[in-house]
Structures are given as structure tokens and as C-alpha cells.
Length: 170
Image 1 (cartoon, rainbow, N blue to C red):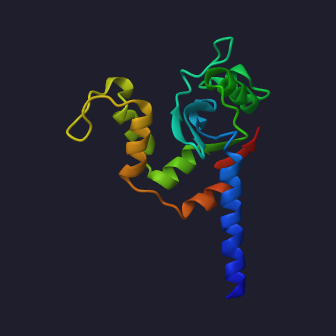
Image 2 (cartoon, helix red, strand yellow):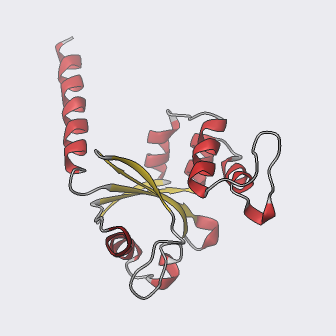
């Protein structure tokens, strides 16, 4: 029983330290499309101050290179380039990037997550249906699609172990 209390206190301490670390430097969660030479399709910034969507096509450096194309523009250091883009566009400097690939997203949020996002945000001219009225912003489309089939939480640590979710300090 005493060991359980120690584990609970340790977990709470780790969570507290993590949140404390985000006061000055957010965590950036990116969705990497491995079918698209590692294109960054969506991102979200998380800190103790809150959560906000980051649009990779609108996030750029001083040369106009976007976060969406960071792997082709900066193949030697794509995550350093992402940090620089976040600093240039948003005046935020993430200390950690969490990369989620398609396999992890489909395992955690359902096999149709990618097509659901595309349908919700007007990809390929989608105009909406009874459930989705017109086009959504990409962030809203991702949020709705993630909740559509629920979240398979037990798969998260498995996807980390498989390397489909990676933690990249920057």
C-alpha cells in the first residue's frame, strides 16, 4: 500500500514539473504525415496557459519556408527549423516537440481519422453534409474528428513504444 502512495506522489510530481516547465516554453504536438515525406499537417501548442492550434501552412520563417514543408526545406534539422518557425511566427519557443504519425493517430483515434479530418475541413472541395455544415477550420476539423470515434487511451503507451509517437527535445 505504501508503494502505491509513492507512485501516486511521483506521478503527481512529474505532472506538476511538466506543467511548471510550460510556463515559459510550450510543448508543440505535431501530426506528421509519413505518406507525404514527413509533411507536418497539423500542430497544437500546449502550455499551462492553455491550448491552441497551430496551422503549419501559415507558420513560416523569415524566408517564407513553412512548417508544413519543413522536412524538405530543412532535412538536416527539421525539428530545429520547427522551433525557429514557432519563434519567428508566434514568438514562442517550444522545449519539446511530440510527433504523432499516421499509424499512431489511426490506432488512437480510429482508422478513419484522416479521412474524417479531410471531410470536415473541406479537403478536395467537400461541401458538408447533415453532420458537418460546410467547411470547418482545420483545428475544428481535427478536434471533431478526434472525438468522433473516441480516444483509445491504452494504445498511447504502445504507440510510444513502437516509435509512432516520439518526444523530441529542442
